[in-house]
Image (cartoon, rainbow, N blue to C red; front, top):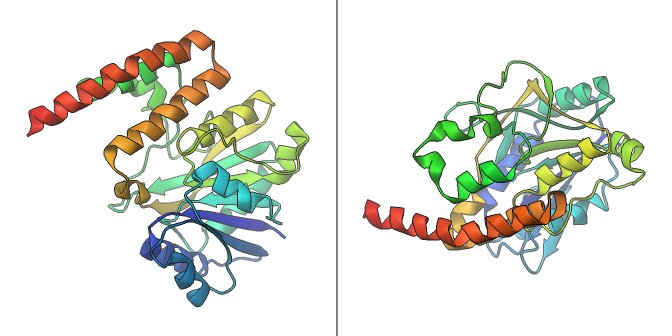
Length: 285
């Protein structure tokens, strides 16, 4: 089989159904399968998908397992030579899948690749990133980019040319294609599993860093495009909880990849950052 598409969904039933409608309008000469992993949405997602798209392989969890663990459930069953991790609020074009498969096959050293992504207003999403370092994450914790946006230009690669294909550090996980063969060549592993220490956030960055460490490549291509709804599930999570998820994943990343003092330093900064966020919120009232 050529392709396995994996969608992890939580409380975005209508968005997911539109995503699947767009997927099944895809054109091209390839064999494929689609998985939906529902993280206990409780909104009728499982029943709606089974009724309207009986060909979809549904994994219904009885709790929210997070992004990495839920994706791994499907990756362990996937039969495709390529695996596409797709957010539930994405809308692919009719040729997105065929073009992305063609691009991956033309770049045998590419283990991961992503596409040109647009938000719903038609604006390009600048999602190519350098790997995080403690300085830029400290700035984010302390909310300084709200006052000085240019301070993150290097990390966010503000000068990246989204009209040119390029090998990069990391790409957004909302449209994230993995070549199983290329991954096996560099890792010796049959399945490109995500690190489950991350509930949400940093898991795709972690995967890209592991790929680069093993000698593989991560690519961006403008030949493929899709529309990204940008975090519709997160709108259903309280702000305080999203901060907890982000903090936990950030610290896990630095504990894994960097000297211990960096995670300790960032951990000390977090209470200050939370206090500043509350202060800014109070001033806006």
